[in-house]
Image 1 (cartoon, rainbow, N blue to C red):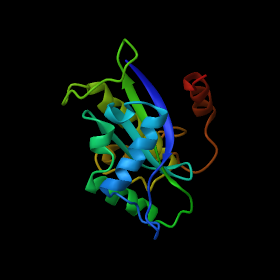
Image 2: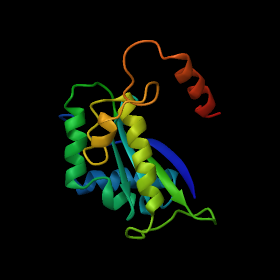
Image 3: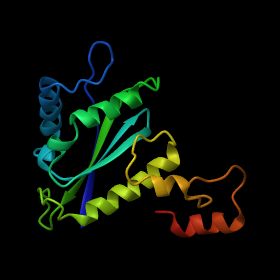
Length: 172
């Protein structure tokens, strides 16, 4: 299973800085995305909504990014994050699943269990960076779990064991 990361792409806003989830705004957004990466809108995978390099929502789709990213529910989630008063552009990142031939994976109902796993992984990473993460599903356990140096770290200097394990698990 291979995933490729794309973005960030600026989320459309109205003149009053509210998130613009209108059909016209969506069309313009996806036209811009497709001008850079053809058919990315039809791909499935995970996506991250962020403002100023701070993640506020992690989502997944087994359908397509175009069918999922600007649902009324998601626009409301994005707006709630934008209402927290952060200055900066709201942006979306896409983590698109690829097939063995290098094309984007297409809709499979609930057939992409790896996408669910990837979403949970990214939620954990995002939650560590932002306790105001807007996700509700998949966060209850993660919000309660404390793993020093990795998840919901307590204040203070990490122990030598934590520092050593971080070196072992740190990516290249």
